[in-house]
Length: 291
Image 1 (cartoon, rainbow, N blue to C red):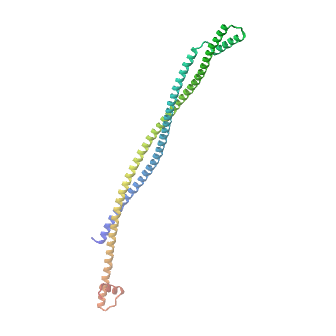
Image 2: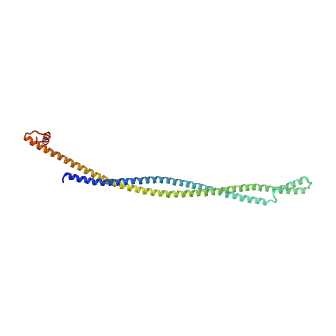
Image 3: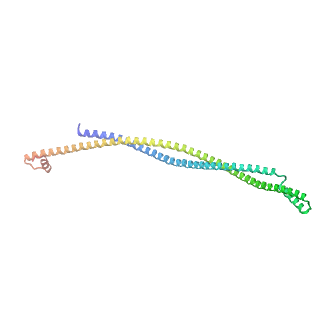
């Protein structure tokens, strides 16, 4: 097979390889473009995931804050309950004491005071013998004793009123605490539900981001495989081009050498015939070492 046929065969092979290389290059570029799209979607989803996770943390913090408030209010409620039980016990004891004091008297404080004044006026304005006077004085002493009991009962009554007011205030405070506990507990549950919703949303986004990353890895793998095949074809094409250049260089050198041989033969013949040589013939004889 001549050198030209060999070169033609190599050129045809290069043409086939270049066609294949173009296909692999297109596949590689398409895969890279697809990988870029999946990477952008993955990054967008990851960014969205971070935002949703921040919302999860926010709602969790709000829920925990509400729970802490409920805990503090429950402790407060226990304190109020303890105070209420203590005040109620004092109230019952005072009521009992008041009733016992009143049982030791007859009538009321005003009537007792009126009777004392009336008896005292009677002593001052009426001539009495010793017996009558002593009887009235004894009545006054009994009434004064009752008056003293009435005063004690009055003091106890004031304390009963104070305790009743304190109990009422504590009941209002207890009801207010219960209301706040209910409100904070409701808000805590609302924040908890919002947190659970955001957790589900975050999981969904994370799954989509993971799938996008898997597609990215798949496309990058396909791009790398196609690039490897493309590079191998380029390498083979370069090797064939080098071989063609070597064959062409060999052919060129042979052609030059054939021309030199022809000039040398012609020059040598002229030299024998003592004819004038051309410059090319003389140069050829010199290069061939024939003169």
